Amino acid sequence: MGDLVLTTYDWVPPPPRGFVRDIRVRWALEEAKLPYRVERVSFKERGPEHLAHQPFGQVPWLTDGDISIFESGAILLHLGERSEALMPRDPKGRAEVIEWIFAALNSVEMASLPWSLFKFSGQSEKRFDDFLKLRLDRLEPVVAKREWLAGSFSVADILMADVLRLVDRFEGLAAHPAARDYLKRATARPAFVKAHADQIAHFAEADP
Image (cartoon, rainbow, N blue to C red; front, side, top):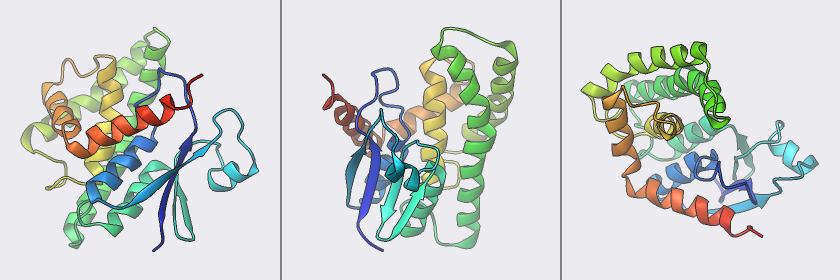
């Protein structure tokens, strides 16, 4: 394994600050106390070097020596393999974390993302409201009965909490108190507080 380098945009407009997905990686690195540095790529120009690391022109990506990984879920899974603070080593515990990683991305974020895009534009769409409600209704009894999704805190909680943060931004957890309490527990962790502050400061540095 080599030096860990997180690459994200050099700047984004104020509305998405605090929600750009490099925060998931920052959070995981802080939880695991893994040393890393942050590099910048242009927000306005997505050139060949950017596309060589992230073919969709998005962020973040992580380099670990000669390994380059894009997609936040894949990056967090890689970091989980590096640190027991992020994912247990026993096969059962590891499998539980992995299933909840995919649940956060495929079951919950799949419903929350179109819903949140409408909310950003000040609109609403009943089919997306209903789809998200169905997913949150299923999640609610799970987080009501356990502190973290897979026993101890893990990368699965980083992903799920970050997905729920965007929902909560538009009061989408108002009818799901257990999910809201779970989110509060996660975002009260010092590693998240630092990751969030670092991301906000990173983008503010490039303001005109």
